[in-house]
Image (cartoon, rainbow, N blue to C red; front, top):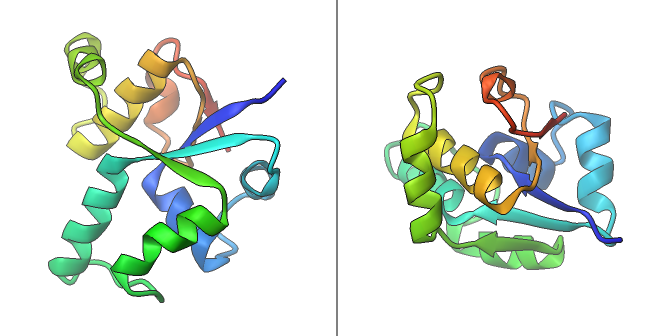
Length: 130
């Protein structure tokens, strides 16, 4: 049976950069091609904004991210109305709008999130892997 995972922004960046900050468990799951791994379009939006503001630099050109995702079998999940509606049910634990839509997406899709963020496990019914 295929397993699915939603990758949080920092985990994606660490994985693609080969950064040791990513856990071995997370790296193993992302490298396992029998798993379906997703990244929210919100993460890509967040990365683009932070690069433009000078708050983030990545080794590749931003436009190369699509190819890096493809090479690593990571699919982009679009934001749906249901994902946005799910925001209405979230407790105000996490204030970051990008993280909130990632959390809502994972809950609506019923898939775990690969993240180191300590606030994610505080959400009821959210499965977190690190």
